[in-house]
Amino acid sequence: MTDPFEEQLRSTFRQVAQQTTTTHDLGLPGPLPRPARSRRLVATGALALMALIGVGVLVATRDDAPQTVQAAAGDETPTSSSTTRPSIGAALAGMCDSTAGVTLPPRLSELQSMMGRLCAGGGLAAANPFAACGIDAGALRDMLGPVLGDLGPQLDQLKALFAEFEPRIRAITDDPATKAKIESALPLLRQRVEALSDPANRPDLSDPTARQKLLDELKAGMAPLTNDPALKAKVDALANDLRTRLETLAATPEAQALQEKLKAYGTDPALKDQADALAKKLAACFPR
Amino acid sequence: MSQHVVDRDEAAAVYAAAVNDAHTPANGAPPALTDLYRRERAGMVRLAHLMCGSNETACDIVHEAFIRLQRNWSTATDPRAYLRQIVVNLCRAHHRRSAVERRHTSVASVPPMYLAPEMDETWHALATLSPKRRVALVLRYYEDLSIEDVAKVMGCRVGTAKSLIHRGLASLRQELQ
Image (cartoon, rainbow over all chains, first blue to last red):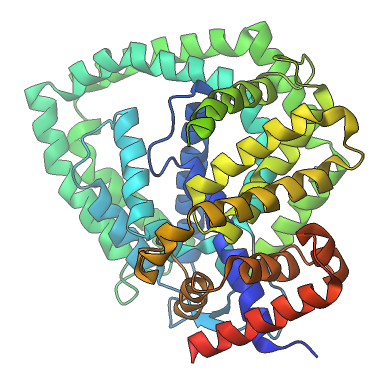
């Protein structure tokens, strides 16, 4: 029979190990200036942010009554200790606080800094959606690791492209009239996000009508920006130029080769098994 | 510590070789080594972190371990086991070097981790264990090694390994009560 204390020790080791590489790859504290590592930092940060937002949306569709889940990442045994998962509302509120000082569109350094603040404040760890689902985030990162390495050069090119377009973006957003409109729309946007994080007032997002209503309200909130013909023309021109450049980038032999690698990566049976296992855990974690 | 600084540059070279191209060895790194680096680095950093308690130190130790492995690559029959052995030895050497520092460092200075309260207490209690006991517990309960394998990796007798694990658990229990 397994000693509960030994199980707790195993869980502690797993939890710490899970955070080891996560914290390390997010660059806390600042890493040595190695280009390859910075590529991994950006990719991991973006993945973590996307994962947080994605899981946040999924969790937001659930009933937000006090939730008790089987914790202990990677521990699927029914005997694992149960713990109360921090609400997604707290995580979203933390995100709003962390992003309060960020201007739009955020600079790359601001995004990195935001990720750093989220981690330093325990925001990501507190939300810990992977652990709550019994998924080892370290294993997920390891699984994606080889692809991230191949993505590095492409990410560098994307970063260069972003840097090239940044002055044009800033010229639009720093225009006093546009800035005023953005600043007037932001509080409303934040207010709506914060309202979503409040279980008492949150609409039932599993209802398509409620989702459509929310979307319409958001569109209405952004109307001063989206209905401005001059601004729309500027943004469209910028988007067209950007799209052309991205298509050119995607057509380069390197990008084509990467696409082929990604296809081959996707057909690797071992990785497919890992991905299937993760999908099953996620499916078990979130009710249909 | 100067050895460490020199080795970091060398480690960066191995790192670059591993990340940039697994099939075209640079800096003399054999392709199998770069493959091993890709596969095992993250796991070894986790293992080293659990044994030495610091993420940054763990990264240094694992870089150093890969450099040592590269030097002895031709004689390594089981590279992964050899790598783990080097990591464990380096962690124990780190503990020996920092013994004085540890004597003057409070438990509260353990680098913060964001854990559930009961796990946080366990993690802090681990810092109070002797290095040998801590290493033995990590090998037994994180690496899931048998007592015989723990003894082999630690270079001690089976009875000693059993005793280290038993006393390590007892100390932890006492610390947490």
